[in-house]
Amino acid sequence: MISVIKKRAESLLIPSQVCEYVKRKRKVILNQTQKRTTTSPEETRALARELGEGLAPGAVVALYGDLGAGKTCFVQGLAGAYGVHEPVTSPTFTLINEYDGGPRFFHVDLYRVSSPEEAVGFGLEETMNGDGITAIEWAERAETILPPHTLRVRLLHDVAEDVRVVCIEPGVSA
Ligand SMILES: Nc1ncnc2c1ncn2[C@@H]1O[C@H](COP(=O)(O)OP(=O)(O)OP(=O)(O)O)[C@@H](O)[C@H]1O
Ligand SMILES: [Mg+2]
Image (cartoon, rainbow, N blue to C red; front, side):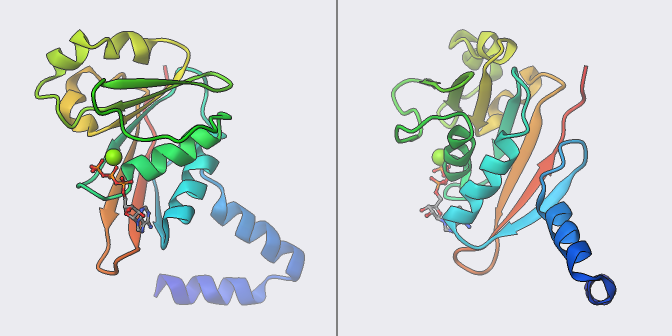
């Protein structure tokens, strides 16, 4: 029903208004929860890059989703927004990878971490409290130490192979 109403609204708009409407629909608005669907890894990276371009220094992006949901793919897009050109892969033997971008860009993967205390031991709190950008895969493993301004991104496999539903929830600003 909602999509029918939206379609009607679109058909009533004149072309320049249509462009504006599409632009508004595409923009990642950082102060409200949004749900997007992507149909390829490239689309997920593009969405993440769009989000990354609006983040402030010190931003923390917590990523949730099953194995293969697209968390690393999302981090690659975010990193692209900060001028990181080297390949971004999950930190395996370390917990945190640091990239030299515009601001410092940290890619954290907590898959092998069993408690927030362990993540603290690796320096996660210092990283999150600095003025770089911190993206954290398997963020639920350190849920209790995430700062209030953490932006949460939840990736869900849809029924179709390459489709992902991406929910972006803003944090609470100070
Ligand atoms: N729409 C999509 N968005 C993101 N990835 C997709 C999409 N469609 C297919 N894929 C594929 O899904 C896989 C996602 O892998 P990725 O490493 O990003 O997942 P992950 O959530 O980081 O997994 P892990 O928990 O193992 O770290 C890649 O092989 C990618 O090509
Ligand atoms: Mg990953």
